[in-house]
Amino acid sequence: MNHILIVEDERSIAELLEIQLTKAGYVCTYVLDGEKAADCLEENNYDLVLLDIMLPKVDGYELMEYISTLNIPVIFITAKDAVKDRIKGLNMGADDYIVKPFDIGEVLARVQMVLRRYGKGQNELHFQDVTLHLSSRRVTKGGEEISLTPKEYDLLLVLVQNKDIVLYREELFEKVWETEYIGNSRTLDLHIQRLRRKLNLQEEIKTVFRIGYILEERET
Amino acid sequence: MNHILIVEDERSIAELLEIQLTKAGYVCTYVLDGEKAADCLEENNYDLVLLDIMLPKVDGYELMEYISTLNIPVIFITAKDAVKDRIKGLNMGADDYIVKPFDIGEVLARVQMVLRRYGKGQNELHFQDVTLHLSSRRVTKGGEEISLTPKEYDLLLVLVQNKDIVLYREELFEKVWETEYIGNSRTLDLHIQRLRRKLNLQEEIKTVFRIGYILEERET
DNA sequence: TAAGCTTGTTACAACTTAGATACAAGTAAA
DNA sequence: TTTACTTGTATCTAAGTTGTAACAAGCTTA
Image (cartoon, rainbow over all chains, first blue to last red; front, side):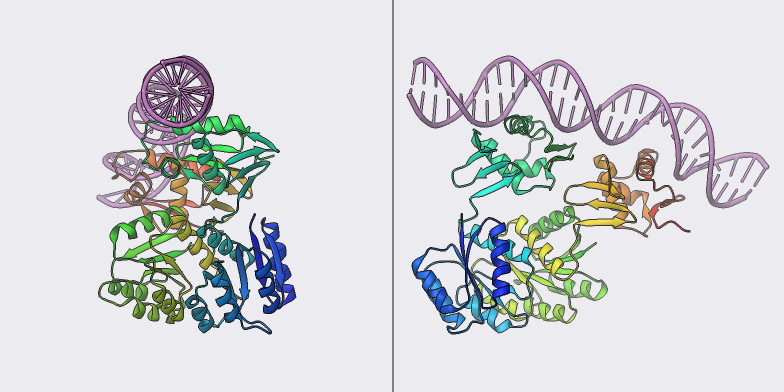
């Protein structure tokens, strides 16, 4: 589980970020000024800092300089036309930036991306009552552990990561087996079958005839 | 339907991008140098430009400057450690950047994000009450799911992408079957017929005698 | 209008593909 | 080495898809 520190002086925005990021499975702390941010950073370990550059008391850049010594990734937030800020920020080692007013989906995407880049990607993925514990490569369904083989796990991971998107057979082969697709092999089908059985996802893992497979919520 | 111009001097990369973005439902054009890019930009309207900064003939930055006067979003592509490039690029009004070597999934995400930000986002294609869900290859009509075979879907996609444009039989064959047109085959007609029935588009899919087919709004 | 194409329609056969089962090769642990 | 386990192949079956044949209907031009 990843801890994110939100440094943002507008309370409403800070709360919005907190709520949405928490919903997305992160643990969040928010502070309204730079001093408190520095305190928090000293006392706790964070995986990522979301930093508004325009801050009272402490200059945002100073803070960023400090954070970069801690080797924690930073995504900073700037106003719409503050191009200079963006440049200065990137120059100082920030990992990404978000422009205000922002789309919350975009924030989530950027956060995920940066954490992934740092190898701190979320350590759980969910599909219905199935949970993939990424760091331990374990899978549970409704709390019960399901034992999957490595290939099965890899395949499931790709499916869950691409929920609601058709995965072409070639694509799956490339992603899971890291080889090209050999037309006449039954091995992909076999693994799909095994996943469907072990996790009872007969309906959810749909075959798209001649194309590939797709993971979707069951239709009622 | 979003048109993307890909400016990339390595043909293999340009083609990879083209194939993947087309698959994702975008219409793509790629050019291998800056001059051709400028030509294309003059003659057509694009919704997004993917621009490799390292280009022969015309400097990437010059090109970007030009594009920004057209109010078309730009995502530029830089080498791994070219931080200076990124900064310069952002300074010149680029909307995002992608670092080489890139993950194709990340490219798609960035493209979607930028297009969404510009109010051009699209994961769906519409014709009247028919919707093609591109990422899942599903089709609904008035909310009801219609089950199409792969060929039927491919054909429909081409028709919808080329709404109001006559598609020659040869053209359709090339695009859907990826083979040359064999004059005496009834197979195209058959698939057209099947689409007309399944989607109730008797009027809308018009035959252009001796030429091909065209998808048009029904005349009242 | 009639001749000569072109396209629509139906039925059906050929072909492809995916699911299932059994089993063998390969691998890692005991 | 034995054992347990994973992974892929071979094969059969069931199901879905796609194209051809044959004929009907429609369009165009003389």
